[in-house]
Length: 316
Image (cartoon, rainbow, N blue to C red; front, side, top):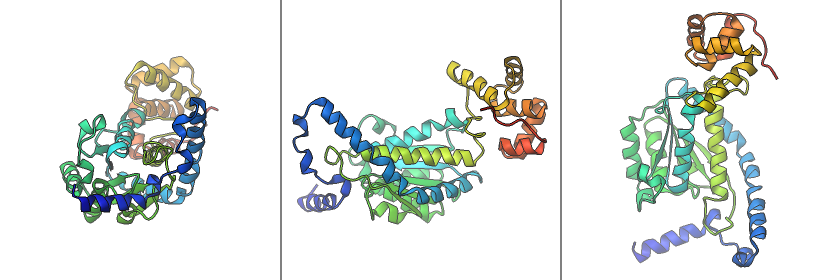
């Protein structure tokens, strides 16, 4: 890095709220552990309020994402460092929670999978790398690309959004600074301003928490809109282990109020598909008919139940 480049970068960082120095915390290393923990806890309590200020923007982005995904589009997260890891985390939790195919919600981190555990020098500085990563995925106009960057200036995230928008894809820019280049580049700019960090520039703290909260909303509410839930029950859960198998049975019980024996019979006939089993019980139909109804309703259980006539309500 040349001295000119360093000076320009230093000047740019000085303008970012997330990088601001807090002189009142200059002696934090001299405090008792309990006091430091209390300070961190107090800082964290400010994050939900910062997210709340962006709820209208977040909701609009989610509705647009759900519309694209209902046409077969994908949800693609891109970021570097902590931001990239959070995107990969959110994407990786969708298959077991909502029975999505791993290709439907994708997390890309600058530098590739190895960057999840070890920093890849220079990867976040490349817009071209983001273009290469999206091209490798076969980006389409039905896809949604979410660039994630606490600073809002990370070239990898900005490059992803700029390229995706040029290809007609939906774009969302999630940052933690106002008037960010990332938000400006995206169709939906979400700027959760969390303020200076407890440790100067450590954006894995409040900024990371804010990003996780927003990503939770984007994926969860999008899946609700796509019919992946029934009420607040995860009826598309994939029972890939004993805990999830037990959860599947409990979900069917909560949705139907049926006795254990009937639940076991329905789940067996439905090959473990919770949504199918619920429809079988509430509509009093077999697995084949339930699958046909769900296909016709594009997987929305409430619509399938309405098509088959009155059914029992959710059990409290």
